[in-house]
Length: 463
Ligand code: HEM
Image (cartoon, rainbow, N blue to C red; front, side, top):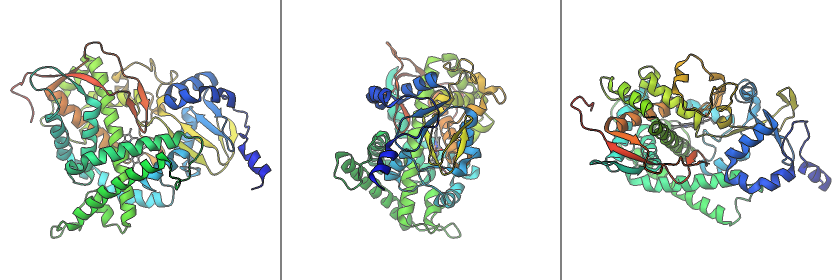
């Protein structure tokens, strides 16, 4: 590339879409990095449904209109791939695992992993998820009077353990601290890399690169141990050689150890932070709305036994509506991105190949033209048929829809069941909602400290 070509490539491509100028961006640069959610909301309000950012080279667009979102993620998905800074940063931790990978690897890996998320499999592992919740709560929840608990940290532990037990049939107890620490460190670096305007060479001995390398090494060690332990386990006569959970399926699939490692790390990162964040916000909303909380408790108490991973589908409509509404207000995956490999049309504007589309479920879920009183917690809206569904994508849309969706919804119902059966969730004195902080998922800044009060033990309480 000549110097002139390079200079030209540094200029934003002008396609006639409004948006902030380079000067505007320079002025708000620091606050954007600290609080991207507020910034995205502001630019949407100011410039509308298609907003252009002044980045060098191909256009970068914030895409808000539900029809355009569908075009990128679903209808035109074949031409909107994942070669974006966001997924390149993630790929530095997960490798080309399911979440970060592009075709053709992706489709083969998705097919291999799918049976681990089938309904029969989820029914079979419901008890394990329940035990993960019970074990973590037993040591954390107050037993003789109200106590303030950081439910964000509790939900993290449960989320990680549940992924381990459901997908790797492993009690991650021995590895949990290491995995939690390494995956949160890796996630934090991924976020930093994803927001950086200047790419750093991977080999450069920068502080970020060194920390990333150390987190990756620890993830490598734990996943290698999980694989070795499984290979050493004698298989039952007539059974699938390495077991029918995700780890077994991957080991029997002919993938290399590196590929299996990438999928395991992907599931740990994609599967525990998101569920933990969703549960944390759900508990906050229920603490703020005592009637909604009582209604969940009453509904769950009508079931003849403990909730299973599939009950959210049709047996507990109110609890499911609460979960759906919490995911609308606080979608943990607050941004997804795609890059086009051919010209397309968004919002009536021709966009060239190479365009970056940034989609924020956080914004789409708060559209006043689709959702009435969008900032209000109103689970009833999800009991009305089809309400707002065209502008609802906590798990994404189209072919790259979250593979863990059913597991996640099931886990949320199971954890709510276990916690609300024994404790009332309330607001501590001097309560102030924590600010949402956009990391890999949207977390409450500084944790979520709620007051948990043991309920009087009733004779009819379910086991
Ligand atoms: C409430 C919890 C969860 C939320 C909100 C969530 C959200 C999402 C979203 C929005 C995507 C699409 C990303 C994109 O289109 O670029 C996605 C993909 C994915 N999620 Fe989840 N997720 C959750 C739980 C889980 C769980 C429990 C697992 C597994 C244990 C998981 C594994 C994945 C994987 C592997 C992908 C990539 C799928 C593919 O591209 O084929 N997620 N998730």
